[in-house]
Length: 126
Ligand SMILES: [Cu+2]
Image (cartoon, rainbow, N blue to C red; front, side, top):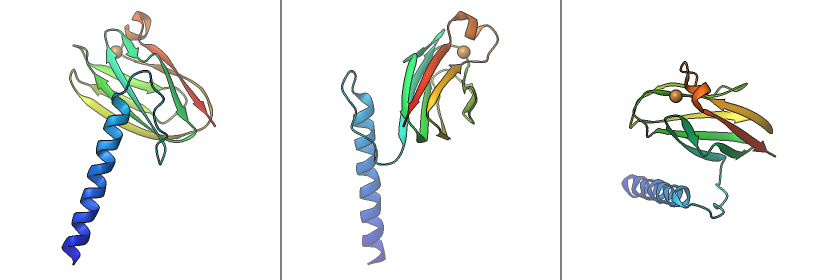
């Protein structure tokens, strides 16, 4: 009986993961509203963020930062707890924070990267 319950829980988690991946991969469409918080997927390359303009809903926000470039990058959202450093090429790191509505500056703090174009904007709406 306990095993059946565990299996059901595992299935549920798997289904949620599949749903989350499916939603994130679509370009251009309106993603379905997540049940809890917003996930922002960002790709870093030399020397930019894709997308440069990020959006999220106020509350719990999770960032999935993929470094698709060939050098190390950071991901910092100014004025928040989101501070991810040392993302190696090919690596994906995540960070979560509770964010209030507003406009935040996003940047890579490795010397020279911001100047080269690694800046972005995060707009958090109510
Ligand atoms: Cu960088």
